[in-house]
Length: 509
Image (cartoon, rainbow, N blue to C red; front, top):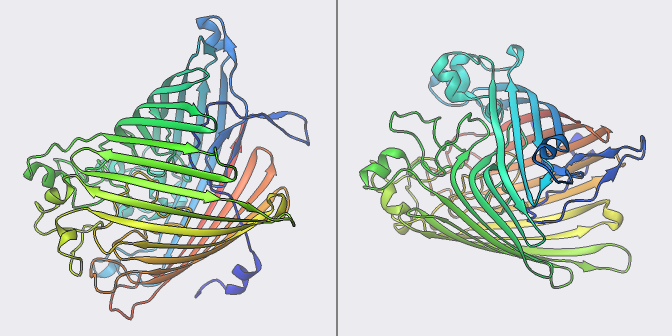
């Protein structure tokens, strides 16, 4: 692309593995550092989510829950630079080159287990060094780096102040050989929801979850969430309502994928409650050899219902390679959202823009669907993989997904992209490779074919996306990310081409 030679991208082929929700009830086995012989308490997955290798054991007293508990620390920094090809802020537009940085970390305590009961509490913090951030009156221009601070707090106080400090996790847990029950603020990984812990503070949910082993190699889960807390918020908020009664667009669900037609004023005008609950359930099985299958459902009563079927089948080969095809079918059903959207001055699409070019049905209902498929070529000894992916959204409504689960994630979604607008097709090729035990990389190329007839949807684009991860030690990680987006403006739509650069350090203790 324009500012980084494609030779650099072509030279580095490679990647990290994105792991999906587990629901596993048994604790993971401890990992031992070959260099020092010590047990590594935690490690990071390819998507920077923490995986626990060592968990507290059992105790026989209340005081023992504290004395025999374990602290888990994490120091981290995240730096971002977003370089638009065509800035338009000086004429009243929204495109301005921007930079942000977060420095901080987390300290999590997991208690020992008393008669099956335990608790977890976690502090998370993010500070914003003055030399690498936007001015206080320019926070609205921040893109990927916006999650390192609270735009709402800065806009209200006129200052970054002391950064963000939040209780990111706080839940009670009961676990036995059959059930795992958690109540409180927690992370929940599913096809719909994710902690998405790639910035400074994870996306969390307030509620109750239950996981149960229902058969051999089969786990069922049910979750009820009354609130969500996005990564750049210091307090929880509604799971789907955009904006507030006071008109604070950054003080409710302001996720980048929120449906802006489902705003506070529209819910009130429709005579509906602006406070909602999120209910998620899934059934995951590996009972058939080499087959991973998941059936998931979601409901936001009075707004939307979803059903998602997903399966991946591994075909081993004699030479150590394997072929792994998979698919995801996402079916979205309107449950009142369409009527709420009609209460706006005109029906809005996902981005709060005109629905010119959408079908008449999409203007009155969220009924829609998507299909995604991929095929992986897995290298021997888990050295890496090659992937081809495809996704297509029905020419109906946009897909509602403000819970960081990403409907096309793992198939065609690239960094910072939202390719689930109606009638969007995406093609992706990806390569991932572990060059050494300490260094891996991932290269993706995607072609996003949006609907040119829909004025409220962005221009078609191509994307190069490169990740690298280097482990200085088993506990010290460096990750770089580069995204190069080139938009096709022949349709007359705005030029959304940009280059994005990220640098992340993590130290676990």
